Image (cartoon, rainbow, N blue to C red; front, top):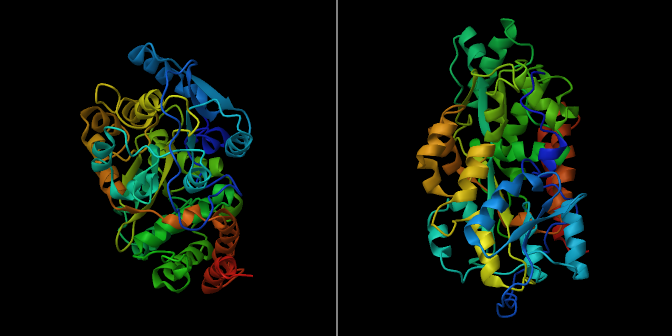
Length: 449
């Protein structure tokens, strides 16, 4: 046992778990959608196995579910189609070359609009059961699986930033989980001054996968920020007082050494190790990490890691969705729908088989279906490592960054703004100048050259 929250580094971050907008340069084209692409040719009986397309790091973990599909849906057969290197880049190359012999690929946030406009994936809005899935979806997730009101994807998993704390450390200073960031700083100072822990907060302020940008979104929403971009993608975060408050708070935490001094250069995996080894009292990340923090085989603080609502004026957090799609080239839409629905929706018996078992029970990740939050098996399982009512409430109180995620410049923005945010944290730039640097980049992309 090494005291880590898990060994989640590259495998999970590149596959199912983190991504957080990774895949530079592959975001969707800008502009209005226009007419929906035509659907694929009329269905015919497929003469090969249906294929689930995934990256090779995580894809094999789907095999028990592919086996279950084959058991339930015989004579239909499914198999895996795995990409050993950069999944999104290779998949786009395959789409461009027309060498697509798979039916249900996945993608992380930011690819939907581009893939749909290019005609690589198709609308699934006409299939039976879509209306029920929409009705059971949390509102924030709906914005991620639809284009122009048409469903073009089913959710793979839902990521939300949650607030975790070490209950034993807080007990030592007689503190409760802080409800606002001013109290948060006070508790951090008490923990440090009383020798409980040197660096009370271990935030994901790394540029890896632009996670500092995701943390900024969550903190800004919690402080009451409005839309970070307006409906024309102008960067309104620059002038939002809540966003400036976030930057001032982050700089104070850094300047007063309430976070590790090298936190800006600490990798994704090592940040989790700080909390999991009992070397910090607070961390913010998605719920899967809490499951591992409370696993005695992976963590030194099992049983002490708890969850609470994100501190702030509104306690709102951010949300993102990775998706399953149907390729436009699938030779049998009806058969492909059976597989897609099994993976991202309901199985033939009307049960959320894969979302519940793979996402909710195996991984402890989030999902978009409201009814699953009340499922007895989910509540019992999550109750072993979290307060499931708080997870439910926090997920319901979430926002997405909106359609800007599909603009061609968005990935470059998140990479550059992550640098600006780090400058604002360290004091290399004043907090307002860090926000302006990010906003100036966006304006440079919106202004015709």
